[in-house]
Image (cartoon, rainbow, N blue to C red; front, top):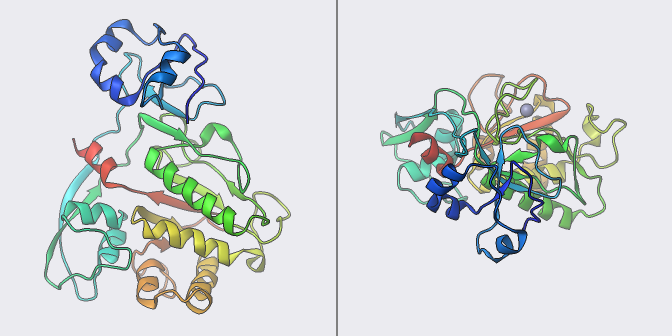
Length: 323
Ligand SMILES: [Zn+2]
């Protein structure tokens, strides 16, 4: 989307690629030197991002920014990843290995030069695979994109709807597809993603790096409270399964926190009504195992009766952290 650049003292129009090329001159001139006119900006091929200093709020119609620190350099995630060797056990698939370490199948696939296949990838017992694992939470991200709200999606606070580009692209796509199929249903309600540029977002422990989102469970009718615990029979399992199934196939989901009761109903829906592959469901759902039995994509964690928490992970992001 082309950004209408109301040029403030702290905002300079740049494109990401142009930014890399003119890093020196940008640093020399500083963020306050706003010379690029909106007309010139519109002419640039890749004029998708504008530069904003962390802590400032961009205009409401701006949905892509490059967040910079005081020196005008893009802020960085902390280095937070290491590569672990894992020996494949009987019954493992790429999904089970990735979800066991709370990373995404696509990240594991890329680390091992395997092409990701949403239909599943079986692994030979005893095979050695590399699993990229985080040892401390990343915090901060420079390229920030705002979640698209509108028909079908509502956000509780617009200030905390910033995420990494790949996360927002996946979410926008899934929300749009869901709205196309069920245009008359009650809109999805989004809690928080991250603040502009990331960092601590109270009261959450995560939500720091633009890859976490809280979404209220979709309901078939407007719930009594927009953000409250819905009755189990009010939940729209058809939409819930559609949304999770679509995102999971992207290979870029790392974890979904969901209350056990809802998991059980969603599992039943997927198996009996949606005709999902039981083998794939086994790698995705903790249900019917006892709590804490094994780490799967969809897992129990306290405090997820009124919303689900989805975490994403992508190879590009891991590459950025490792460099
Ligand atoms: Zn959350």
